[in-house]
Image 1 (cartoon, rainbow, N blue to C red):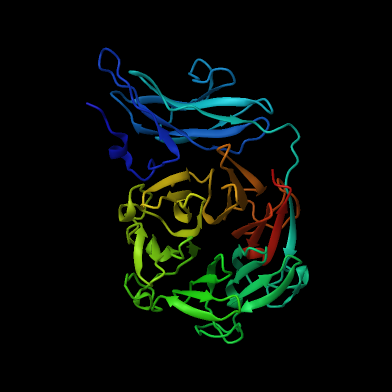
Image 2 (image 1 turned 180 degrees about the vertical axis):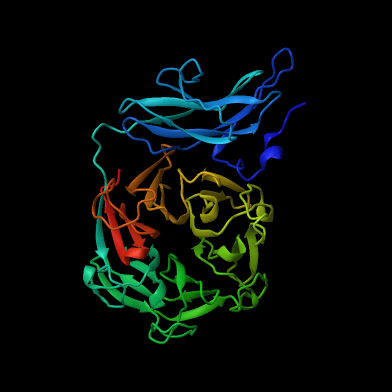
Length: 459
């Protein structure tokens, strides 16, 4: 009888839709090899190395003794007779570094697992290595002096106090959730920083820009009409700001709670830290404290779009499923792709999740037990080609090239927080918390440096 690995060691580590699962096979003696998936996205692809991996969804009729990935430049269905990595520490969900690769070369890779019943293989994924001596992106400071404060001005003459989130409008202006100044700032394309909305007094007050009050605004997004929507973490409210700067509370009763309602102002959220708006005007909220995704319709009806409300450590996990059967751990940033899928920065699960319009949740990349690929993602944004840019609290800004199915670090180093300008591979951020993209350039809310950084020359 098959031994189901998911049942033995828990679904959370293996619920990954980014892993394309191949069917297992049986030999004439009814021996069943393991069912293996290959990571759909290859990470950190350089001229000479890359990271791939796989997932075991069923070990078959015998215990797995070796797992890894095999790869080739000529064999489109590589086997363990080709170049391969191997590990005898069976984790079920694994990554492997491919080394000594050749620049500007296409490789075919697939995961495998070997037992006494034979070797099971995942589907083949291909990628192309980078060119030798590829030019890295460049990081500079677009706005902010680096000293915590509240000063309007041009570029580095301005001051922020822990900018938490950033978004852009159709004209390329940037809006910043200035967390501990309790205001929303605006930065023009020329780098002129002003206060868009908020008096700077901590609290809650609707009204004109100079009288409105926020309490630790943590996320924001801009719709096609130029309205700014804010997830105000301290008050647990969702607030709309018109292009004229007038603030109105549109959802939430102010309590840190979990309440759905046909009256948006009677609903409750718990420390919301993500927000997005779809083409129909529906608002989606990363309800971080409740570990789920909420939906606010244009008519003001608040429901749970995906995730199960739970705060118990034993039940906060990663589960791919539909609607409220799925599970998130502290979801934060949200963004839509061109097909209407909602991408989620699943902070506590080290993953980027994808929610289809019918509520089906899958894992795009990452793993709840491995932070190498994505480490505590806080925010994400997509460009017009559906490339995904991720702010990774570990200290990186990542890019997923959707057409090539490749993810690379474009700036920063994992586990190395600080402040350094220059080439992306040596630059440093100090808790990158928000990310926006304008005309191919990426802007980062560099939280602990109290700066807005700019990344140019992105490949």
